[in-house]
Amino acid sequence: MPRETRVNIFEVWIKYDMNAYDPRGQQVASWVITAYGKTPTAFLKSQEQALTQAINIALRDAGATLYTGFEKVPELQAFLSGKLRSASLQEFKVKSSKAE
Image (cartoon, rainbow, N blue to C red):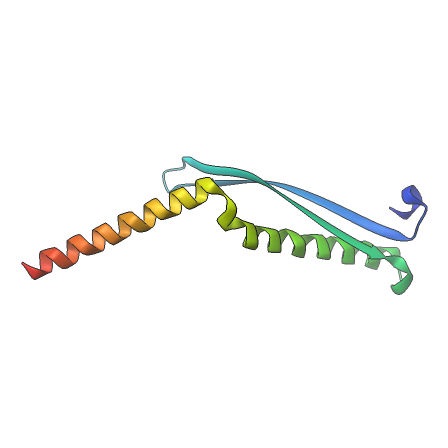
């Protein structure tokens, strides 16, 4: 807040503890996402607008981090590759049984 930093800038830090679960409710992965947003109040009419803008920027940063970082979580990749392998095997079995 500007009263704490003595400059007209709002900064927002967000930290999410992310968890992914399989259909049976077993935890598959756990990782942390951090996000940051910063807005100078000089360009806005009110401090509320400036804080809202900083929060929106931080939330967009969190969304981008989730989107771009999803594939970097090793446990998720292992889980998803196992699911894809399982689906491919099931499809192969269905095609094989129809061919008989």
